[in-house]
Length: 113
Image (cartoon, rainbow, N blue to C red; front, top):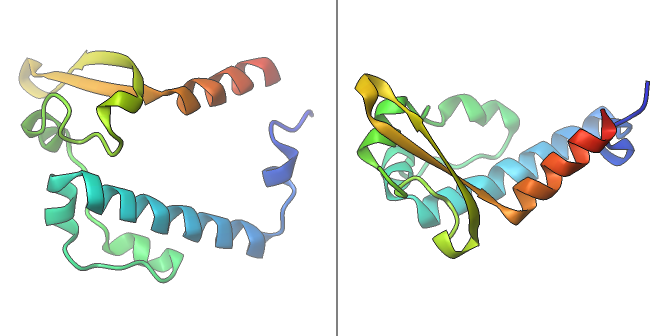
């Protein structure tokens, strides 16, 4: 079976957990800085280990509806190059934004399969 991304798929368990923790911490910083609803929900919760993930709030479809159209975007709108719309709870519209990096990753996945 061909590996999709050997760099990540062959790293040790400890390395993978450290990478996951670092990415989670970076995501939390970005969310607190750019997404008001998430900043309010998280408060002063910090992540020092992967076990702390359980302390973070879950995003519900109603949160997306209340933040329509771009209130849950964690990056500036100028970095969004593709928008997808769908129907949320009770027929409310939802918008999902994708960056150039998202498209790059999708292209890599499609070539690997």
